[in-house]
Figure 1 (cartoon, one colour):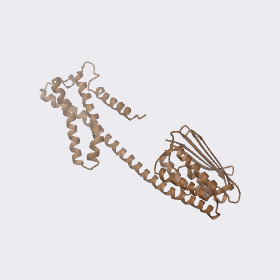
Figure 2 (cartoon, rainbow, N blue to C red; figure 1 turned 90 degrees about the vertical axis):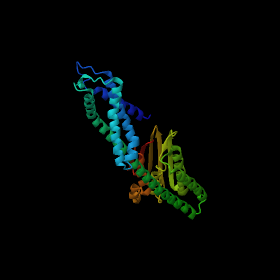
Figure 3 (cartoon, helix red, strand yellow; figure 1 turned 30 degrees about the vertical axis):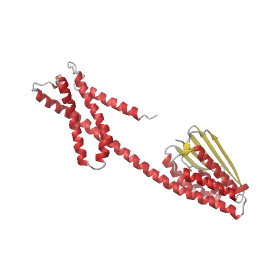
Figure 4 (cartoon, rainbow, N blue to C red; figure 1 turned 120 degrees about the vertical axis):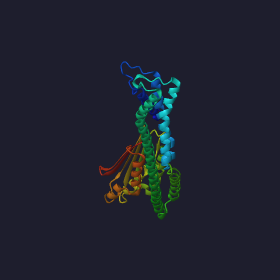
Length: 342
């Protein structure tokens, strides 16, 4: 639910209430403030609300941001004079300007008008300046956030551009190994790679993709690795939970799985890799376990380009919404990744 409209309504209501609360001598005993005076203050504050949105949406973008400072200053002063005189003149003609007792002097009505305008000027100046600077601050904050988002989007595109060739080279090396031994699985591996690269090319451009698509990609990748490694590795893959309607950043999980195949396989003995994915509500849990290969220990923790990029993607797309742990448990490497999905 978008709460912004409700927030705006609440703030405007409170702001207009201040115009009534701060009406001079409103709560002073023995002094009766005419109702039209309260309406006049309410009308003045309503014009201030209008000025806030006019300043935010039009004046700052058209004059201040474009550095037309002279025009900006002229328009700001003109609007202030309009808010200062318009309510007073309007209510003067409608009600004949019967001043309340706090402003009742023996001077002529012209003198009273000047006195009243002077008092209004003093009470209006600081709220006007405050509203002007607050709306300007909101615009600057909005532009700053947009600048950060653009920077992060550019950074993310760069990370994906790094990741795709990295994955391609690794997989091509795997197929090359099959070709060297003239494996009958080579055509199947090439077909699997084609399917994977089609996903990489079409989906990795998006910030988020359906979770089902990403899981299918992982399954295809594991199948391709099984073809390459044959019986030398026992791969257990489990995925459970409801994926309907959920999305994830593309190619985010695969580096941790790829890392297990790259650094967790010992060619001198049979190896085992366990991959477990669980989805509960909006929480995704990935666990990847593989045997500890001593001479690859440092490489596993560094994780290469793929894992480093995945870490950066998590930082950019899931700030404060993920937990990543890479540790040794019972002579095995264990990667645990928890993500709160969008």
